[in-house]
Image (tube, rainbow, N blue to C red; front, side, top):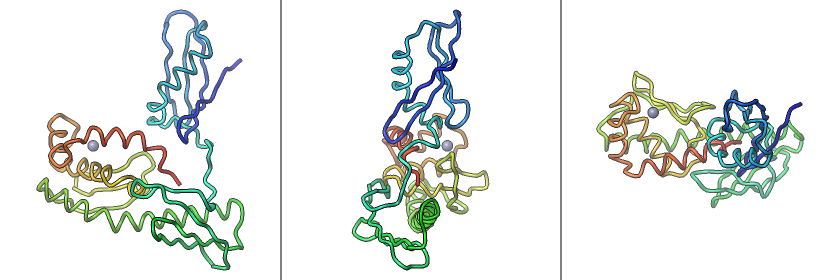
Length: 242
Ligand SMILES: [Zn+2]
């Protein structure tokens, strides 16, 4: 017999399975074995309510470790009234069905005006809108990130080799040994203060490779409150999706 449950946290749903183990360990242990697969090992006598409360308490940690279900609601529908994140703000969508050949996105007065071809429906429509938005975000990232990188690089006295915008599912950004910086296009959904932290973090790796105290001292030069920004980013992680 398996016991399982679901805990909702923000926009995420955490589905977990309970593994009852006899004697020995007296504590409740949560592991994320692979994305979306959360196992809670608990003593036989631990009440269900206590297990659920433990999952709820650790929700942020679980989300950070990719423990949310891919099928978690809400699934984006790309309809009027929905909103997407851009530079840390919620931007509302106004969607019109037209005889346009492809999805068109216009960003105007902090609103997304979207035209969707009448010939598309269901999953096809959703996928076309998602693809169009991804392209839009990628373009914005490519336009805006280089300036921010330049500014922080100047403060740190470093020079990256190249800046690339990529689709990195599991990370925000990386710095290769040759000095190439790679940014997840989703970065542009985050608030400017968080983007600057990410930029400073990767640029600091041009001076110090690992995450030593020396490394964080470099990050702190342009971003003295980097700790707070880093925490906000970890919480935001799963929410910036299309
Ligand atoms: Zn790092």
